[in-house]
Structure formats: C-alpha cells, structure tokens
Amino acid sequence: MALNSIQARAIARRRGRSLLFREKVDGYVMIAPWLIGLVVLTAGPMLASAALAFTNYDILTPPKFSGTANVERMLGDELFLTSLRNTAYYTFIGVPLHVAVALGAALLLNTKVTGIRFYRTAFYMPSMTPPVANALLWLWIYNPDFGLANIVLSTLHLPTSKWLWDKNTAIPSFILMSLWGLGSQMITFLAGLQNVPPQLHEAASIDGAGALQRFRHVTLPMLSPIVLFNTIIAVIGSFQVFTTAYIATNGGPENATLFYVLYLYRNGFEYFKMGYASALAWVLFLIVLVFTLVQFKLSNRWVYYEGDLRKG
Amino acid sequence: MTTLQRGALQLFMTLCAAVLLLPLYWMVTTSLKAVGKEWLMPPQWIPNPVVWSNYPDALTALPFNYFFRNTVLIVVLATAGTVLTSTMAGFAFARLRFPARGFLFTLVLATMMLPNVVTLIPTFLLFKQLGWLNTLLPLIVPYWLGGTAFSIFLSRQFFLAVPYELDEAARVDGASNYRIYAAIMLPLSPPLIGALAIFSVLHHWNEFLGPLIYVNRMELRTLALGLRSFQGSFASNYALMMAAATVTVLPVVALFFAAQRFFMRGVLMTGLAGR
Image 1: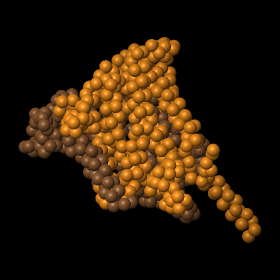
Image 2: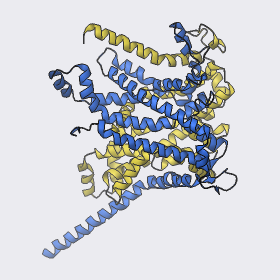
Image 3: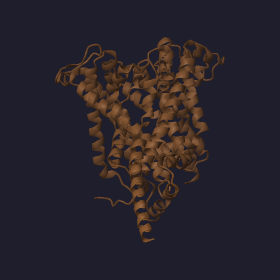
Image 4: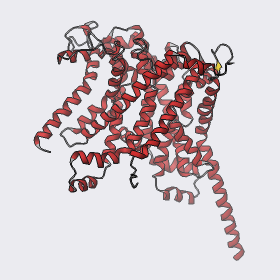
C-alpha cells in the first residue's frame, strides 16, 4: 500500500513534469507562425534595411557598399528636408487638432439628446470611407471652380480658397480632410467617457465643481490613458501618411505635400534607389522611436492610471 | 440642462451631422449626374436626370470584376490567417507557460509601435526573390504568420479574461492544450473573432501601398488599386469616378450596419487598449 502510494505520487509528479514540458512545447508550437513572421518579416528586414542603408542598390546590379554616402546625401538633399518639414507640419498641427476635435465630438455624443444613435452613426460614418475613395472625393470637393468646398464658402459669402492647388493651403486642406475621418478616435473617447464612474461626477458636483471644473479634474484625468494611446498611434500613422497624398496631389504643388513616405516610395520604387530609400526608412524609424519614447516619458506628468497617486 | 440649452445643443449637433454627411451626399449625387452635369454652376443639389447607368458604365470601363475577385480573395484568405494564427498565439501568451514568454510578448508590443515602412524595402526584395511579384501571395501569406501584432495583443487580452476553471477542468479530464484552444476557447470567442475579422476585412479592403508595390498586371489589381487606375484614365469625369468610389464605400457601410455590435465592440477593445 505504502509503496503503491509512493509510486502513485512519483507517477503523478512525472506526469506533472511531462505536462509542464508539453505546455512549453505547445506554447512554442502555437506562437510558431508569429515567431517565424517576426524573424522573416520584421527582424530580418529591419537588419537588412539597416545594412542596405550603407549601400548603393538599384535592384539590377548587386548592392555596392557606399559607407555613409547615403547619410551625407540626405543632409544635402533639399527634397528630404522638405518632406520632413511637410510631415512634421502635418503631424504636429494635425494630430493635436484631431485629438481635440475627436474628444469634443465624443463629449457631444455623450449627452442625452433625442436621436443620439443617429448622431453617433452620422459622426462615425465618414471614417469608413476607404482611403483611395476618400482622396478622390476630396480632390473633387476641393476643386477650386466646381467643388463643394468653395460652393459652400461662396454661398455663405466667405472668401474661397485654392485648397490643394495652393502651396500654402495644401497641407491645411489635408488636415481638414483627415479631421473628417475622426470617427474611430471619437468612438474610443466615447467609450472612455462612458467608463468614468458617475459617482466621481456626483462627488465633484456636491463639492461645488462646475461643468468645466468637472471636465478638467475628473473627466480628463480618467480619459488620459486613452488620450495617450490614441496620440501615440496617431503620430505613428501621421508620420507615414501616404495614400491620400499619392492620389490627391502626388506631392504637389511645388512639393508642398511631398510627405516623407511619398518621397521614400519614389526613391525606392520609381528611382530604384533601394539603398537611399532604406536609409530614409531607418531615419523615419528613429524619429518615430524618439517621439514615442518622449511621449511615454512625458506621460507620467499628465496621464493618470486608476489607483495611482497623483505625483506633484 | 435647461430646455433652451438642450435645444441649442440639438441644433448644433444636427448642424455638425449635416456638415459631416454633406461630403458623402456630394459623392453619391455626383455619381448620379449625367456626365458633364457635375460641372454645372450653380450645382444640381438633386441630380436631374438621375443617371443610374453611371454605375454599370464605371464598372465596365475597367475590369472591376477582376478587382472585386482579387480583393475578396485577399480579404477572405488574409482574414482567415489572421484569425487563426493570432488567436493561437494570443491563447499561448495568455494561458500557457513557456520560457521567455514575457520577453516575447514584449516584442509583440514593440512591433505594434513599429512603423511598417521600415521593413517595406527588404520585404519587397524578399518577395521579389521568391518570385511572388505580380501574385497575390505577398498580400496574403504574411497574415498567416500571426496576423498583426495588434490582433495578437487583442486575442491575449480577451483570453486572459476567460475564467481559468474552464481549462483546468478540461486539463484534469486529460484534454491537450490544442483541444482546450479549439474546443473550449474558440467557442467562447465570437466577440473576439468578430472584432478581429472586421478589422482585418477593413484593413485589406482599404490597403493601397501593398498592392501598389506588389501587383502591376491589370487582372491582379485590387479595388483600391483599380480605383486609382480609374483616376488615371478618367481624370476629369467626376460622375463616373464618384460612381466607382461609391462602389468601394458601399460594402464597408453595409458591413457596418450588418455587424454594428461587433464593430463597436472591436473599436472599444482597441481604444481601451491604452488602459
């Protein structure tokens, strides 16, 4: 009997161990597709593009090592600097505006007016337009002579604009166009607003806080993690703006909308300068990395996680 | 809120909704105008005559039947791969203990923040080497390798919230990890699968840069790419162009109304990921 129970325990232990072993094997089997993808489609290509950045490669002949020539070229490349400037303009004006307007829209949609479902659908709908259709539609809306935008403006007796056809208004036109698609960000803010416990608002009201103070000291802190996440994703996306620009202006007028990825695409796939394009890709990666880290770093000054004690 | 404030708010929101919907109205009405009438000043707010034939005209001007077929093929196959491989990985990250799990999951999170452009050129060269240019493979196969970092992340979050008693009971009964995944977890996951599928469908329906660099032959183009070619051939024929554009918007809108519940839940899962 005693022997049997010892044996049984030993068997159970062995079985337990083999179960643990199975778990390790199965775990790796189940993440294997992702792991292969990570090596073949992410890590490998990243290293490859880092290596290609130091070469001259036109696809037809093998890559030739060129040292830091690509980096030096970049520093003197007027178009590179232009594309960087355009992209920064689009991102640093566009993203904060986008976040603010989406938040405002979410606040509107969080009220109890009649027909709120209709309003939510109406506000969300534009963001469903696929990028290519979106670009073609706005190309038509912005048509200086026959487009909707100027028709509306002149009906209201406001000055009209050349929109995408004027180098000073081209990027603001793109920002306006992107604001139209605020839907998905707005919905996430709306969800965040609905997650704010009503007791907090009640408590603040009892303490005599007005609507504005409640927004500033209750709603905003509770929403701050979502704002951070959305801002980071929006900045990354905004640095990579391509499709709408490629279709609507293809960089014009006078390179006013030559965005970074558009310039990278041209170098890689129109001029077949794969080495230079890889260098451009890595510079973009480093820029995005720095901005993401900075945002995380700054976030502990303004982002509030539930249960945290506020510093300062 | 006073009645007056409520009325003002209602008015303001109606105005906002009108402004937001006006571009879509403009797109649809333009698509129904007789060719040339889109250039009338003042514009026809209601097309007269209503020209439905713009739609068949636009769709036959270029081989849209191919564009549809290719897009649907990519959407279906890539979505199947995303759902299968990312729920598998998500399940493993949430429920199985294996060496370096924490580190590997950190890599998932890191790749979520990675701009896709960084890998664009070497990936293109790789697929070129494999002889996959001018095939749909580069637009499908990568999604059988874990879908996207985001879909894995969503899956893991979802599975973490499933009560542990369920798989423990199954394990006591001798069920393997694969069986627990397939017979216990997946049947509990329609909300997750729905959200993953919708995101994937939208992504592949909208995707432009990928098809642009990988596919050149007319009969392999996707809708997004086909719409672009349409712009090339009918640059100033806005009636036809808006008809073609509307055709690419309608399925998305239909999907939204058909699957609104999944849609919203998906957006919520995404947005609240920041928490």
